[in-house]
Length: 457
Image 1 (spheres, one colour):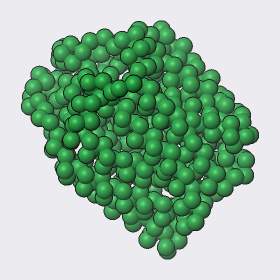
Image 2 (cartoon, rainbow, N blue to C red):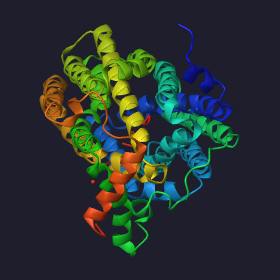
Image 3 (cartoon, helix red, strand yellow):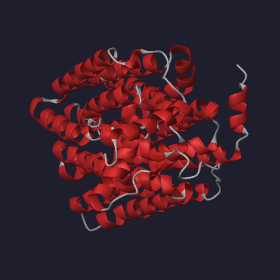
């Protein structure tokens, strides 16, 4: 089928193409860390709980940074901010193998993980706004799908490479490779020109809030501007609540998967990396189909259907003793995660005025990610006590209950209500109703948002 006007014009968009290609290698490195970090912890400590604690550090840091990341992104030069975040992560991750030469230092790994997560949060929020500034509104779904397709390729190759690197030279050097990819990302961003966005005051009173007061009050206002927009929107509000519940179950899913493969089933890091690599097929399939599925069935059906697939996959992974079946279920999990992420991020970009997009994205990720560290800690502790199979089945049932709850909300509708103009009026009205001083949270899009967002979710 020949490419349509949107797709062909997207290929002619030089800035988006450079941005897209530059992120491709960075995504590959991120996929390496996705597997190498928990394997490094497992190798150093042999503890599922310690693996869960690293996930908790990631989640807590992301939540704390998310409280003000959107405020910074909406007021900073987004390209320079993203370049600085890439360079910072390159230095931090590049230092891991040299620190590890003196022997495992878990406290150092916790600190580096927290710093890298903080930089990632700033980058991811800016990433979502960057896509909206690089392409037209009509091209958003196609652009997000292409970026997720690139993520899929990284997901296919990165984990397998991580498994090999971890088995050959250790997880510390695998993290160092990830650090090098951020240098490539920084160089590519230097060659991208973002489109002109609306002036800082263009979003009305809601866009200008967050500058009053000081200390805790100022921090609260930075967060509340985006949160009010979320809470005022008839679709973003239930989406945020349900995604918060879903994140509770899924943030620790990777730890359970890797522990199941390496400990319960007695396979090595290469096998674990290969399983995660195969799961990338689900990302490729979802990225290719997301735009068409969303156009055919609408946002609600796609997002709720994605959660059904996630729940079935989580339960099945815990019960399966076959590596092949586990790999297929992991691909189903990633298909659901990617489809939900693309739909969520695109809808949020469509309905949010540009001057508010950073704060709305940051609030969205902060709120729904808030349950992640708690969920990761609870799931890994319960799995250590009762076993991965029992906890996985319970998690799958919980996902299906989330779908049932979603059917009682506006999410069941085919299309998202309102567009950018209507959303801008809603945000201003919602902020005025809330009064001075005074509801979301991985990424603006999360995952996807990005993919994002996506988070990963």
